[in-house]
Image (cartoon, rainbow, N blue to C red):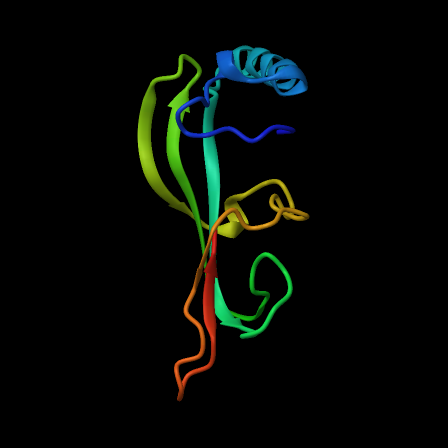
Length: 123
């Protein structure tokens, strides 16, 4: 999608511009094929070793230790939540590199702890 949506406003009726047009076409295809369409926000949590000093907004992870993909909340086309916190495998995501060219929205930076180097988690 072109726009970012919060879990509070994600439904087909709340989609904007080209997102709405794309979803309407997709909905038509799904109905013709006997499929259901759901809308969800995809979250990627990446943890790993990071540089302690960084001039960027977020500390760059140079060695990933954990990557977790999750659908936070899943909504049907009417905006009703049908499930939440669904872990998904990266191989199950059809779009290649879905978050490429996106900066993290949040960071939990641990800093240097003596025996252990700096670590961070990005969402």
